[in-house]
Length: 318
Image (cartoon, rainbow, N blue to C red; front, side, top):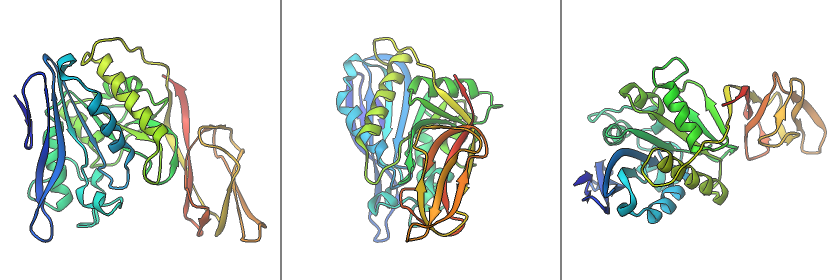
């Protein structure tokens, strides 16, 4: 029998339930939706979670589609799932937990006696560290972004190669291999000896079916490659970036992009211009170095210095 919160499954069974992580302002319990898929045969354990940032919904869409396709009688090992991590932010479709104004993916490994976010992080970290592999499903918030898998432990970490392999297997097509900020699950879990990635499944308002399907394929790639399911998976070459150039607006106005997402750029290529409301160009911004146009804002209006876009740099194939 394997349990997570109130979900318990014997070998060959699936169960769903709730993981209690605190109380709301009216004293009612906060319970995260969880699932246990317990394979009929012994094997590894995979942990998956979604919506640690409350407006990043593509990962929820992935879980919604993956779980009904899993037959535990054909599975070797166990899958532990938290379907929505940032409970309070998810309820109001916001990025940060509104109870403590915290970005959840900066709170790991958490504190069981700390803030709301720290308590949720502690409970989900305890579940995650029962696993042999971790997928922390994200998206580029409401920005526009290519699909990618992020390796966040840093290239000098003892588990770097294992995390990079997991990212290659997931197979988004692009990998950002760059040490992440403190408090990310993909930073904290490798310190516990568990290969972890955070697939960033595009960016959307609501969710995007293309990115969700890419995530579903990625999960099943992992399940086959690591022996949870029968069948082979041979990872395809991925485009890896190990750096980011971020660009802001040199003037206020409207952004006119001259480069498309996923496009290769060279130093000096025009990325975008800023115009006034009458179409007169006020400024032009060019790439500082070769790379890939990785992410950009969705709305055109910008104030001076406001974030506009990112270019992935130091690009190689892995």
